[in-house]
Length: 264
Image: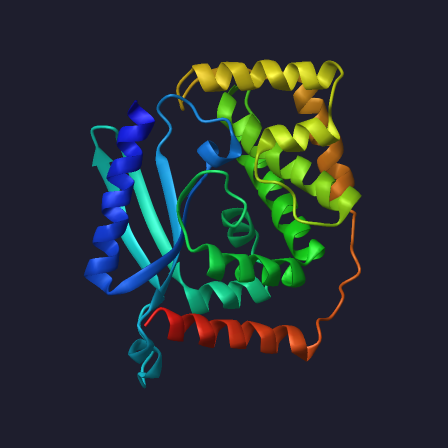
C-alpha cells in the first residue's frame, strides 16, 4: 500500500514539473537501491527523468538550463529525490556512453515512458554503448567505495553492496561486452549462480533489506577477500576502443530534431 501511495505522489510531482517548466517528460524511472533490487525499508525514492522542451526553447541565442532539480523533499511517505535531464543533454551523455544514463534506460521501475520515443532512444543506446567507458566507471566506483567505506572492522551493510554491484557489472562487461543489467540479482544469477560466496552475498542481502540504511555489522571475510582480489585484477584490464562512424551521430541528430517537433 505504501508503494502505491508513493507512486501516486510521484505522478503528481511529475505532472507539476511538466506544468511549471512547460516540458514533456519522455521517461521517468526509479534509480538507486530500489532499482538495483536491495532497498531497505527506509530507503529514499530516487526518481530520474528525461524531458523535452517545446520547440522555441531550442532557438534561443543563450541556451537555457538543461537540468531540472526539485531538491530533496521530506515527505511523510519517505524522502523524495526527483531530478531530470533535458533530451539534448541526455543525448550528449549518450555519446559518451554515460553509465548512469544507461542504467536509467534499464530500470524495472517505471513511472512514465513514451514508448515510441524511448524505443528509438534505446536503439541508439545500443549503438553508443562503449564497454571501456562503462567498465572504467564501475571499477572507479568500486575502488572509491571500498577505500572510503570498507576499511574499518565494522562497516555499513549497504556499502558492501555499493562495492559488489559495480564489481559484478565489470565482470558482466568483461565476459559479455554489453550493458550489464541494473538489477543486482540478475548479475548474480548469471555470474555467480551458486557456491559459498553466493551464500554469503545472499545472507548479506537479507540483512540489508530487513534492516535500516545505517545498519552496521562486522566485516565479512569471504566477501572482503573477493573484493580485494577482484579489484586488483580488474584494474589491469583494458578494452579496444572502436570508433563510431558519422552515420551514428547523424541518426542521433535526426532523432533529436524529430522528437522536438513531435512534442511541441
